[in-house]
Length: 89
Image (cartoon, rainbow, N blue to C red; front, side):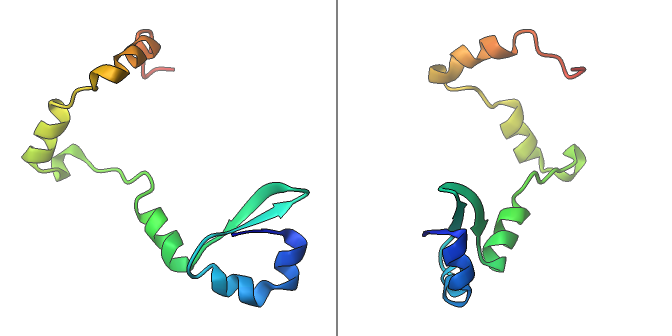
């Protein structure tokens, strides 16, 4: 659902209830500015955000899967973008 900021302020109660079930996009001057979501959805999104693991905490099966991962042929052209890449930059 998409609403203007004026409409959001005017109908906060019902729109905040709507956000419990679906994102509510709030616009200003016709441009999307904010998205209101439930705290449960926010927690779900945060739990998957840049989760880092130490290699020693991973199973050998997971390490083998990573070591043997290959780029699908249809994306091989992306290798060109990485040819001069180094982690120092």
